[in-house]
Amino acid sequence: MAAADASAFISLRNVDKYFGDFQALDDVSLDIGLGQKIVICGPSGSGKSTLIRCINRLETHDRGAISIDGVTLDDGAAARAVLRNNVGMVFQQFNLFPHLSILENLTLGPVRARGLDPQKSRELAEYYLERVKIPEQIDKYPHQLSGGQQQRVAIARALCMEPRIMLFDEPTSALDPEMIAEVLEVIEELAGSGMTMICVTHEMGFAGHVADQMVFMDHGRIVEMAPPDTFFSKPESERCRTFLQQILRH
Image 1 (cartoon, one colour):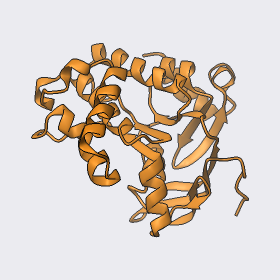
Image 2: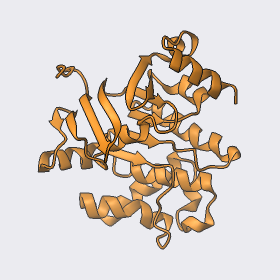
Image 3: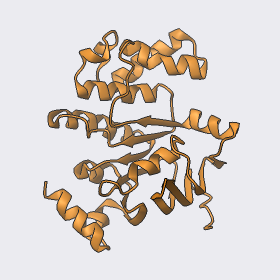
Image 4: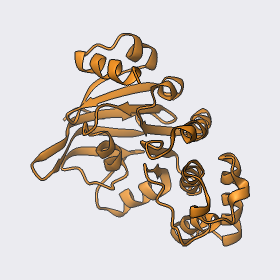
């Protein structure tokens, strides 16, 4: 097994993941530094979402090792604590609680999981709704908001747990085209604030602005990794060149 980079905040070493006979991740190794922005792209079924779900332990990997801030992700209390204290995730679907107000959606986690005082939790919710530019929606319910607004609430909800790492799993794929830009703008601003970020997306214009490193996956493997300038102008693999030609044509 390859040695982990001591400077890496997130480290994956020779990670395999199976769903029955299907191998979703095949010998994946990746190091991500504190504050680094990684954009993962690739065709459908290439393992992108599985990779970040393993980092958040929503899926458990079968072989290899994943660590965050030096703590190996396993079934132990230390791993649960490092995930709770460091990792926030935003999904394709907004996953808001429909029966709770926006305020209640945002304060539930900090109060229950972190034991935060309800008033402090409300202040936190107000602050992050301001950051995602919808403070006026605090007393509404999810069904009263547009898709773009709901996704911004989902981002604010993750931020209320004050994570050091944000994982985005195709955060605009469920949105109408006119709503995509408003969500990407919020994520771009977060990227500028120094947060460690891993984003699975097909929005290549956004990726070029935000990413420190692009990662291209195919058939569960990392095929290519490079800074955006090199990745888009001089992709090394034929598979990556074909993918970029297809996706940039749209």
